[in-house]
Length: 127
Image 1 (cartoon, rainbow, N blue to C red):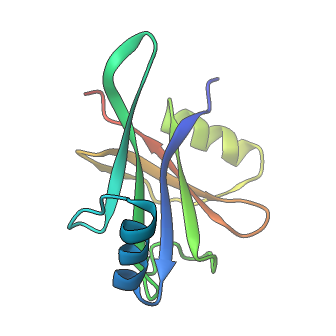
Image 2: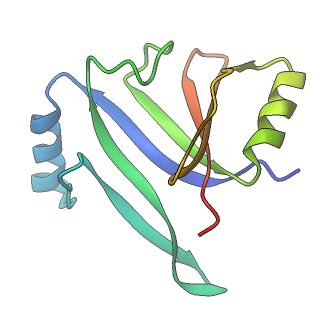
């Protein structure tokens, strides 16, 4: 079974999100958008038109989105088949969150790694 196919996003907590976004904009030239982050568009050799993106975003330090992890970051990995992967992870004894979210942005599930970091798994929508 195909598992992780790429990095979907990098999310960082900050006690001063505006200061952090400003630093990345000014010093690294990142075009931070009004929603609090940016998308890095990419493609592969077989399909030169943009086919996906990796999101970078800042969350307020008070955000509970990364819970139960206490880490100030979370990585989102693209996956081919979220339900199959979550089933396999459960069978392998991993700490998989029971919650799965579906929206126009795709399907999302979560697992904790052995160091207590929350890992987000994302199956992009068909289109």
